[in-house]
Length: 580
Image (cartoon, rainbow, N blue to C red):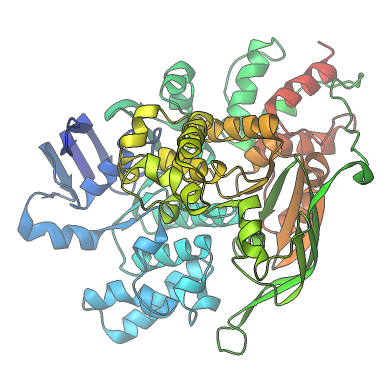
């Protein structure tokens, strides 16, 4: 039986004001068999989320049909039955959290389906256990980190025992171990319980693990096939703004350089390990220059954190120590990455940098300013903070007014404000015509740019970004980092990035700080940190696929470098090892 059958689906978003109606889906047809595991990939604004909202009747087709387990979504008398069979998890978990405790939130769905209390109790415990959140059963969901909230949202849907599960970027806020755990849960549900799963994702390593991949661009279905067959269409994917798994990209580069013969392209890390372990390596002079870290005495400290501890809601049943004795220095003009598992204290730490939170113990100095009292105003001019969800920082009726808001609060003259707004828009890649649009009409990537533009317009010395690329497609992520590098180059801005995407940290950061359960457990150059794979694994973190591949090869042959960070470095190392 077909779980999902979509035929000639079209959908148009109605116009606002003078703007033209936007065609979001254009003549899409596909089907998903019961028990199949399918991934949907595409750039931001390609139509993925619009498609997902058609699958449980949140949106109805302008033309064409959507049929779920033999029931058409346009049949009003069947819509509740469809929604009980097809559960949906959204990108932003706050949109799905409704209760005051985790237990009540997960129980909400089964209660509304009329499930007996004893069965609800069983389902709640089982669902939370599956997402590793049972120990938080009595916590308020609003006191959890973004990744923890997402696990609760997934558990709430699992508790309703759906026959089909649709996840719209549901792993975007999770750490690598959390994403891997969720993928293992989904694969187990798919194989053992025969639950049909549709996964919308920007993570190609996730798409590589499914039965089929659908590629959508500009509302059209471009490709439909196995992960290997889809990822082989590199030119089509490139035009659609989609990357392929890092090991697949490395393989293609190695073939193009004549280092190995073409054949069976790896899409999983294990396939890459098996393929490249067959190569005959011999030592040669390294083509990668050793790092010579500058003396700390030569660098100017802009942030000094000493013995910082912080407790949420002290003296209450919800008391939680989020930071424990953290000491860290940040230097002018560097890009510092802060990594750690979900709930490790990363977001709590950065909210101390401009005085949003006050230390329970310890001290912070930013350019010689302590974040307290009358100094807070000056501090917040120096430190710009971009939150995980850009929507949290957007509230004006136009993009231009939103970018100008902080400048007006600072008393900047109107002429200077207009100049800075245009400069910030240019740096962040926002076209001038966008300045007159509502920020809430923009895509996720554009909203993030507006949020960043509003902060950099105030010329902060330090820019702090919490998960700046969460939910963005690969092309959008590259653009974010492109203008962050430009900002550093042109203004010597110090940049602090909190991220779960290890490839971004490896590619763009000078140094990395590793958090674990509120403690700072490791700091060093990016290469030094990613060379410590065992410690990272203990803290729930992965390394980039290319780093894992060469770490594995180094275990087989000691002449192989194990501190490779990028595909380009991997190709250089392969040339050395093969003497080509």
